[in-house]
Length: 229
Image (cartoon, rainbow, N blue to C red):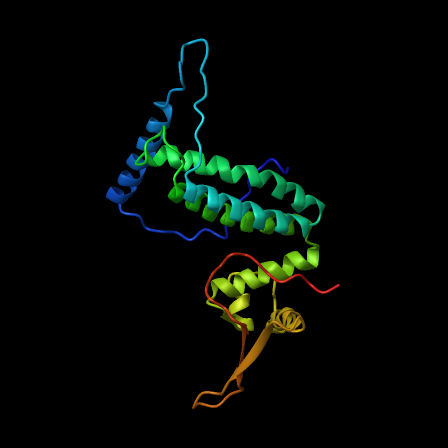
């Protein structure tokens, strides 16, 4: 498993792409793939291809050394499974820099790997590491942790706030408002979620309780704090 690159996207957010925009993106992707297919090794023949050795530019080398140092420190603090994944991701950054450099082509395919290509690779690897943590956490979560995570994701999709009645809509998991409120109370017990009370309307009635996530920034990334033992 450590040899794989994982991503864990959240629920689909439908985006209405214009047809012409979609065609332009497809054309750019195809052009990038075509450029990679056109690459040739040194003294290439039908029977043998000699690899071309590319060095790092001074700026790219500095970025690589900084990344390597930070990545090694992270790996030392990780448990076995994630540590094994980190050991494989280390070399992946260099490979990403090479691919990005070849796809870009503005610096020449025979010259040293540019600082910009390495910078992009390090940034992309940061996202990959974030996704790897999420996948490993999801694989290791208990049933209660899974339920809490899915509930947090539901609240996030609702804008960071929700009330028991809203939880019931479109779901059979909470047959009553009290059952929905009970699950929200459980999240509150972890200290990261709170209630706010809306005053009754001018027509009277009981005050409404709205449950919200602290520091919600609208990013539906599926992350959640681990449940306490």
